[in-house]
Picture (cartoon, rainbow over the protein chains, first blue to last red):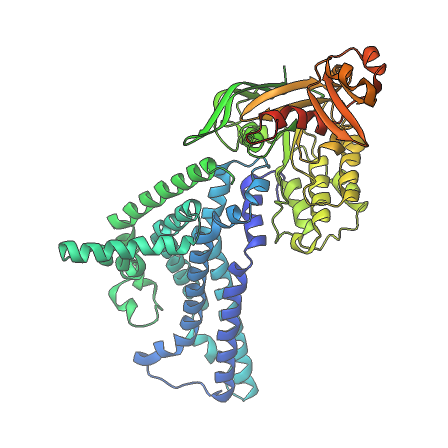
Length: 283
Length: 288
């Protein structure tokens, strides 16, 4: 690593501290793989399905990737909610601030974890898991005298990697305002940052419901949580595993104004988090 | 140019005034002991010097405004805060790697050599170390940084007497070279008396005394007065009187030492005795 690259070292130290960002997805990956292996050994024969139902073969691979990515989002949420709070709680912020690293670089490093580093780690783990699944399925089939190549028909690895990288990227961008909001609250809250980031939103939704009888907040929140799938893929992608590149719809995703509004909000919250870290005095 | 130059520095938290127009100048190559009662504004002042908190008034550290230029200032300023603040999850080797990674003036070989003198294991996490070892580790990291100003806020709090002694010995023998400047606060006043070159008392957000230790030694005198000479000694306007070893002990500011010697034994007072003499009078509720 380049000497004195402050951002790189700041990211590195976040990974030292928060080992859950790779241990949790790796643990889930191991469980998914173990389950798949158990199933394959019990049912070694290649399933003979007609072309219309061929997508069913992709389900284990798609499921494995999904649970790994889902885990990484949960990890990212917990990480972001603690990122600027934990260092104040244990007063280690006094050590970090004794180093020649600005608040901007520190917060940028912390923001890069949920936005970039954790998704990349999750993708790498998912790809490795799928490769392991394919190799072990081939081996099991070969051991039982079946054609090992049939395993690879179920999951076209190269194409699926493109699909997964695309899906991960659009989710990171779509979730950016959520992560930035959590970072902001973690820099602001005196205690229980996760609670502080959720309760006001629920309160606002209830207030709106009672006062106006509408549910804009609830709609906005659920759209923010589920919207990336809906906006980034064609409509059939929600019902079955995405196996065709034609199911990707980047044009619609990147022309969605709510994506850009969300990113603008994310930038604002990150800027506020930098300011909070600078102004919060050690207690 | 002074290393630290504070003029009329003010800081208030709501109605509470922490720094009340404080003025202080610390020249290069000095070791300043900053002494004050709890709540006098010591930590607030240090936070302002380190760029951790904004303040009003004029404050320059190494010619820079610490609040605006904290990260640049930290190339040349080190600090150890009042309690062990090294991240508890960090491994010793990670701490060395990290500081070597981000700090351009860090001498890794020097840090390794300092650590080799301790029993600290490279693979240990900070939370597994004793409080004394954490301080040793922090000091090894800080001493390996070629800084111009070192700020220590209660660096030996909670350490046993051996570690405390080692701490100041290491600081004087292996770190201080006459060009660096050190500012230290502590309640263990006695153990820094022979360490510091300058002394400042802070009370209610103001500096109430600054003196070099050379001046301190000639200006202040403590007289263990012979019983029959007590009235004569009291007539010389002592600033404080206490009982000790069956004798009255009087503290004088600027008295003639030869005259005092006629009345009993004269010696240089401890900083703590002067502190009690000066602060005891002003502290609310203290006996007159």
